[in-house]
Image 1 (cartoon, rainbow, N blue to C red):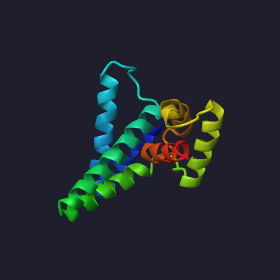
Image 2 (cartoon, rainbow, N blue to C red):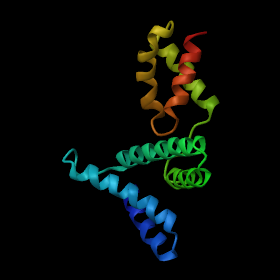
Image 3 (cartoon, rainbow, N blue to C red):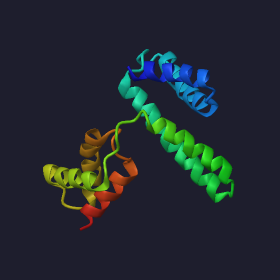
Length: 148
């Protein structure tokens, strides 16, 4: 399981003295544990761990952007390094062309005619690309294709 790999990598990072990786992975471990004690499902499966990791990557990138705008490049760099650590555990992300192809196929499948069908298209696409493509990119491509 992915969770077990994360936990093992925390120990490896501790032994090797990689404090950045250790702290970053400990934050994810805390999120996993928080989910597991919430009573929802009790055990975080790989899908839930991937969701937590994806959310962590997005949060770190947004934080880095904020630090960059605020002129704190050192903090921004740290956030990007943490995002890169988390991204190592995520499946390979789809390229823009690959996502655009799926968007076009899905629009044809659901018979979308224009921007008013945005919700229907997004609802059909997201399960296909979950964890493999950025939701913002998907939304942008769907809007672009529906406005044509």
